Image 1 (tube, rainbow, N blue to C red):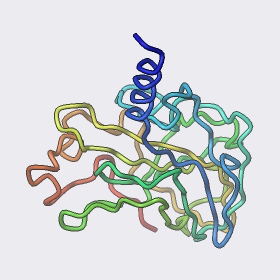
Image 2 (image 1 turned 45 degrees about the horizontal axis):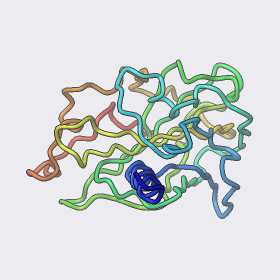
Image 3 (image 1 turned 180 degrees about the vertical axis):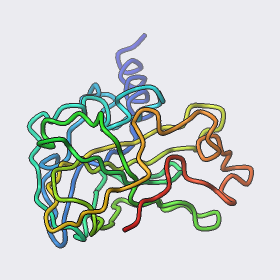
Length: 223
């Protein structure tokens, strides 16, 4: 095989593996450097922005390597603040995007996400249209207790019926101040929150799957 053929084949594999990843975080009008407040995953370089597909994997919490902080800093935010997750490239696989939070028992930098998680927002389909963006903005719930949290964003790619859906995940580390005293519910464990028979997990988007679509996971917590 010629060298040029080998290189071309390698590039084709790399291109096929390329996806997207939430790698940057912002609050209000401030957009912070890459990975400053977002835990950087440890996928191999050829699959740096690849998905998680195993429903039983702890990687579903904060991506591959995301159980530890790896030097990620924790950002102080006020309850009610607007925040944004930014991607390296816009989402292009159809499917829902969701936000989750989990309160650390101490410092977010020391927390592996093994506690309970609650969902704060869903971007599902509008008719047959999906919210495929290069940035997703929401707000910290005003009523949650002060403390340090993992703030998790998840996009579920359901573009390939018959194959395992793809989870694109990142976690930011935040310290909430000025909050309330409401205990969020319902809560779930990750892994465990998503089942192989969830309608929103198995939906065929090419056969009416966006009609009456139910986003997988618990109901959204609202203050």
